[in-house]
Length: 112
Image (cartoon, rainbow, N blue to C red; front, side):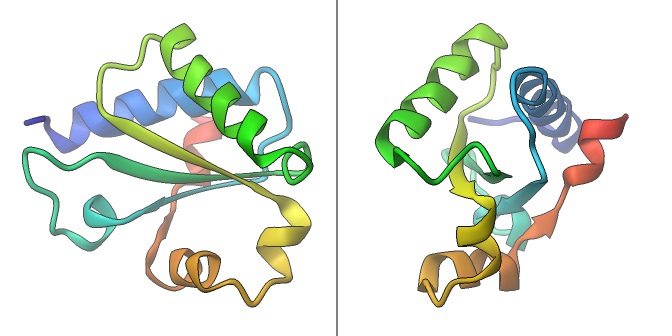
C-alpha cells in the first residue's frame, strides 16, 4: 500500500486518539519496517499499544483493536498489538524486547 509518511502518521494519530478516548493508553510504539526504514508498498504499519487495560484476555483485546480500526475509519494497513503495562515493563519476552530495542516511541501523538 503506497502511502506517504505524513498520511501514515495522520492515520496512526487518528486511531490511537480514538483508542485513547475509550481507555488509558500509556505508550504507543511504531515498530517493524516503518520504524527501521525498510517498508515497501506492501508493508503494514505495526504499532504496539501499551495499556493497563490490556493483559487479561489477549485474543479479545486484539479483536477490540481491530474493530476500532474500522470505527476510527483508518485507511492504512495498520497492525495494532495490545500489551499490558506490567507485561511490557517487566518481561523477558523476545518480541516485546525487540519492540523496545528497535521501535520508535510515538506516544506524543496522543497529545497533539
